[in-house]
Image (cartoon, rainbow over all chains, first blue to last red; front, side):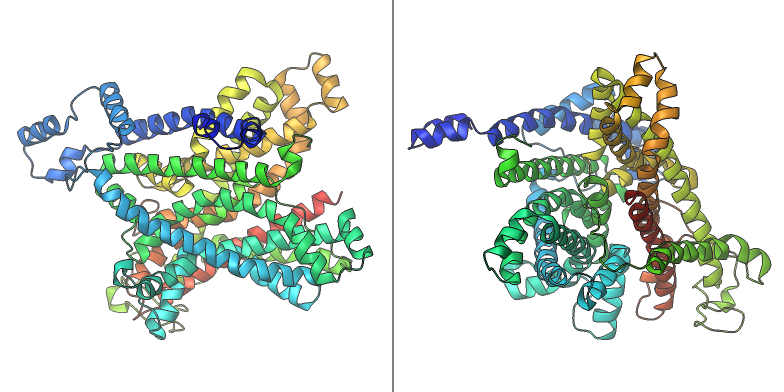
Length: 338
Length: 292
């Protein structure tokens, strides 16, 4: 990081970047991420070793002879002491080798990119939908607080918050796929077969994931905007110099409120990734969540371990990104006066 | 679960702006409606099967399978095994409510206690406790819960234990943050300086002060746990058939969605209403306690 920065063209910019609290924050947070990820890997290893019934028995079925089981255990290296297995595994992960699936015998690192792409697209789409609806909705509601539109949209979004996304997913399938036939009920069309078809196949799952989030964002942003509009001095200044209400709302209050929204969005990434476990299985999308569930159901604990680590890395990075973005955007935090 | 992560990890939920023209009636309704709704849910699940002629949730007659809603004797119809759907919803609700209450109680006592101790003692104790919880929080909740439940196995007790892995750290974070806020208050300094033991400080001085925040979160947590327990049972890792649970009913119904949508719709309605009740109660409590 610092090497790259030092070779930069403008020395003043370089020193500003190097001395910036944001960079300091990144460094500090990256350091604390290491023990967290180690902890996650140890916890998962211990938990998965506690699973009743060995993987070999599971793979060979109930008729397996003890001899066969012993041979498979030997072959998969499952008869070595747990500590050795953990350290071997950790060494492999640090070299980008996540191990081989016990069931398909495929290296996990080979399968992961295509699956990550599907999940990434789904999560990205869910964020885009939720923000694209929530921001205009919140602004419109905050324009006249406690009036009709505000009340209605807030009651609806309170209901939406209480909607489990798997229930919503199934009801969407029931309505739009089974009854109306507008969307495919399940399945995934890759981007290579056309972006339109691809988005079409992801529309229902993305919306099911986006809706509770959308409601939360709309409520969060709306109440933050109302707070800003009612209590802040800069709003009064802007009004006093003759700006119209929409301009004050959009150019002043919204800019301030967007900081909080960014933090929340960053914190949500981990939750959305967790939600893909269930959403991808409902819509049978070949993403990483479905892969995790398959691994769980077939007791392929190498796959489970690998994916949980990937999840944890993404979560830690997302939280880090949110923190840094917040620090970079908000001068009060950037200069450490708050 | 998206909402879960949002609600547990955002310490920054701003207080609702107080409505300019909120009448007293509205305020009362805000509390009375969710309380009434939840009372209805509890009554239906725990008392109704005792007094009303409701069939058993399991062991139905296959000859009666897949009756439509509003059939005589089966108000909401029957499932593929001939079990009464209404009865399964009510008995499944008992499981959901019991699991949710236990998980939140565990979180409140264990998580709240550890968080308060960590915040009060600071230093190495704080570091150890909170770093351990950081590990749990770094795993997306559903992935963590799915992995834990796999190693513990299905069943009510194990489901509770599994979900506690998620609720305890969340409560601990809130409790610690609140404790830190109170730590330098005069009454806390006085308690410390007069040599009060840590247990007494936590129980007598901290608990009454951080209780409201934790209770508000616990109500929110009830809704969250009910949803996650549903997800777990939906995936076949929580409560297993033939024992009823809203999650596994929705899953079973989803398999024949086009033919018999009522299998999915009724448990979904029950789930939704209960979660709305708890969420609204949490909101009403927050409004009430922050207004003091």
